[in-house]
Length: 484
Image (cartoon, rainbow, N blue to C red; front, top):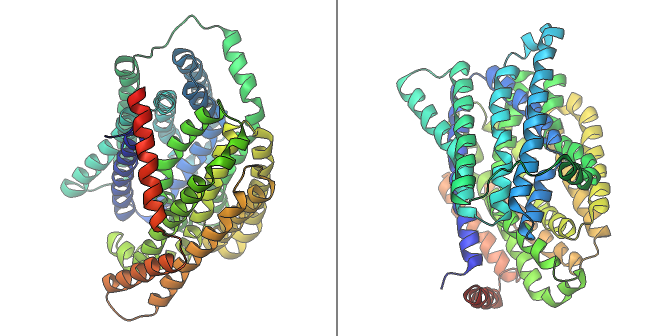
C-alpha cells in the first residue's frame, strides 16, 4: 500500500528533480553561450531583484503554509497573501521605473534591471498559489506549478541554441514569457483543481491581522535576503562582471546540490506544524530513534552529492561551459559545497523551532549569521574576490549551526554532531584521496563513492536497524492513511 507519506515524498521528489534538471539545463545553456560580462550582469540583476522581492514578501509565505497545514481557511490565506504580493510588487516596479529617470547613469550601466523586474514580479505574483499547494500538501500540483516556467525556458533555450544564436535579448524575452505562463498556470490550478478561490469578503482588518502576525518576522525577511544574495551584490560593486559571473555560476550549482533537502523540507514543515499543534515539544523525547535515523540519513545525503560533484567538477564543467567556469571555480565550489551538511541541520533546527513558534530565537541566530556574512564580505571580497565570499559563507553556516546547537531546546540536538563530523570527514577523506590520482574521472568517482560507503558502514552511520525502522514507519503511516 502506498502511504500518504510516500506519496508526498514521491511527489516532492518528482517536483524537485524535474524542476532542478530543467533549471540546470537552462542554466548551462545560458552560461555556455553568453559572454562572462553579460552572464555576470544578468546574475547580478537577478540577485538584486530576488533580494528586494524576498523583503517584499515579509516572510508571509511561511505563515501561510503553517496556517493552511494547521487547517485555517485556505481561501482567506490565498486572498490576503495575494493582495499583499500584488500591491507590494506593483509599488516596487513604479519605484524602480521612477528611479530610472532619477538615476539614468545607474540604469544605463545596469540596463537589464527594468526588463528582468517584469519577469521577477510575474513569478512573485505566483508565490501565493504555490504556498497554498504546499500547505495543503498537494505536492503533485506543486510540481506542475514549480516546473512549468523552467520547462518553457529550457525547451526554448535549446531551440534557440540549436537553430539560432542566443543573445541576452532573447534570454530576457524567454524569462518574461515563461514567468507569465507560470502565473497563469498556478492561478488556474488552484482555482479549478484545488477549488480554492480568491474572495472579496475579507476585510482590511483581516489583512492587518496577518501583517501583525508577520511583524516578528519582518527583520527575518531582511536578514534572510542578505544571507541569500548579499555576496553576489557586493561582488558586483567591489569586483568585475567576470568575477561575479564565475562566483554566481559556482553558487548556482551549489544551490542546486542539496536536492534531497528541497524534497524533505516542505514535508517536514507541514508534518511538524501539524504534529506540534497537537503535541508539546517534550514529546520528541519519545521519537529518539526516528530522529537519529533522520539525522544520519540527512547527513549521508548532504555529503554524498557534494563528494560526487567535487570529484567530477573540473572536467565536467569545463566541457559543458567551453572552459569558462570549471577549473577557475574548483576551490570556490569546494568551499561552498562544504556548507551543505550544515544547511541540512540548520533546516531541521529551523523547522522545529518555526513549528513551535520560537521566532525570537530564530531571529537572534539569523541576525548573527547575517552580520558574519555582511561584515566578512566587506573585508574578504576586496582581498580574495570570489574565494573570499565563499570562505565567509562557510564561516557563517558553521556559526549558524553552532548557535542552533547551543540554544536549541529540542531533545537530540547534540546527537547531530557525530553524524555531521563522521559523514563530512569521510567525504573529505575520499575526495582528497582520489584528487591527485592520474586516472579517468569515472574511475576516480567509483573509488571515492565505494570508499565513502565502506567508511559509513564501518562507522555505523548505515545500520541494518535503519531499514527495519523505515519499514515499520511506512507501515504505520499506511495504517493511519487507511483509517483516514
